[in-house]
Image 1 (tube, rainbow, N blue to C red):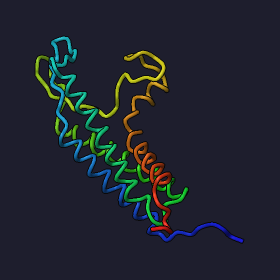
Image 2: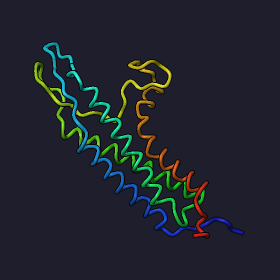
Image 3: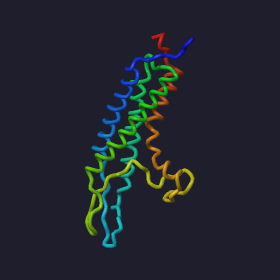
Image 4: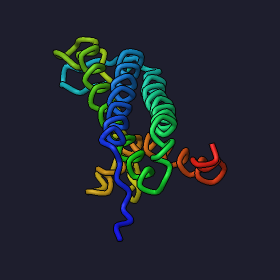
Length: 183
């Protein structure tokens, strides 16, 4: 007896479209709204950031985290419903959330890089693009230490917000929501 559930193709197409639309919207929103980071190139070629620019780094980080939180909740809200409210639906939802955040990172960073040119010749002011990657974020080593592979991976911790929010939604709906056949 075959007990596997067969799903129509739309069960995978709809989550992919949701992920693409939300990821693109999130990337554009972040890329078009975050402030640049102002600095100066010294005659020796060192890059110095102007006073008060840590606020812009913080705004860029929190904006991406907030947009990712909303993106994860929206992804799960649109995908984890109906016939997809089962364990395999959780997997589909998390894959859609991962696709969404990857699109948001790629598009958002491309847009913000196009908006701000970054350092130029020595002695000139510049405005650089903030990054989604948290340079110096390490799980084991102190900040600003290379940290090896773990340090490189932990620098991308912001990308976990979107799938984490989607997983939270799936858990909450599974624990407190009505079953699909009760609706």
